[in-house]
Image (cartoon, rainbow, N blue to C red; front, top):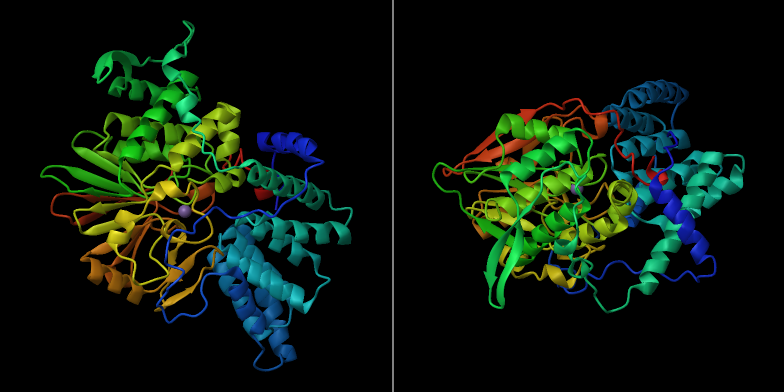
Length: 555
Ligand SMILES: [Mn+2]
């Protein structure tokens, strides 16, 4: 894995580490998710789901059926060489398949497990990567690459303490490895910083947004962009001037972003805070019907791929009073135009509050933004305060949208408990917890994935769980739904219809991370509630790589 450029994030970590040299490390608690009942009285037959440890135990328990013959070993070695080539070319799924074949033939060779772990990392199946790396260590504790890969996977699922142990092992065994040492140091800083933030986070909830008086901010005469105009608005306590958004302003904003220009900080704050106010007024599950001659377009992850978002609007139509959009989470992180993407979507939310919708994704969360780029990008292009206000807005985003009582749209998927109904989602108080956390209703809505097998299973990504076609069918029947629409996973065709037609994945970041070669997709729905899929390819963008603002650890 190549070492990334030094991000702005790391200098902050350096400063924090200096500040923290005398701070005692305390145990970090995951975000509080205790108010949901789903973990208490689960009625599923599945005994162990969702933890990386369970997945790992299953892999470790796997015993070879027969000792490998020399012929098996030779064949396995050849398949492994082929898998290495395929992995280098970026075909992760095929690489995983080939390493699996090698493991079938010769299951006691640590390299096959360690290499499959690397392929899983590339495929974002971090839980599976941890399990394989652990198996490789079990076979040969001296094969150092296994610790390094497991550390990367732990980092990716935000378990820096576990990652740190493995990075320490690598540094101890290979003291000359500068890359590993740099990652170890970075990881140590993150662990300290999280401990520090947990320590200063006391009960009192202060709103950064409330403390910002954006109306009073002055836009200098030298600013060459369009300006927001004020209109006098009547309130109970009198008449006040209030900034208004217009289509002209948004069009100018798009042109600025295309040219690599920034928006004035006053407008950045104004747009985020105006959108935040609207999110706060919306229910946890927004319910929309589609009127005659209107269209609602449902999009999946966009991940800061602003130029591809422009392509989507170009061929599918820009948002308007008769063309609604729903963006189903993960519009920030990874792509290096996440601020542009989020600001544009928020501006449309402000302009068309009852026509334009956003669901929260698992990347609209602080810990993800620290690692996958959005926090670094906010600091590089605007300021830390801009990130803080964005973070506050993320905590206010609705978690789901119900379209015409037919389609339940949410970022991840269904739940660990069959008892959960649409009414539970409707009633869920999302403001009681700011972050999705490690368990509970919000985490499951934002993180889970489908699986082809019936029942529930451990998550290959190491967070959440997987649910089968029977789970989806029961949920749809019980709640009177035609289907569940979710995003969260790349699909080569941009979308996939699974679980007998009752589960649809839609993903709108074509050529995800500039490397996956997938199409993007959008679902257009009119008042007949039929689903019409359109797909599109990635378009060229300025020469800035994905993850340019991400933590060095992820590069
Ligand atoms: Mn996601």
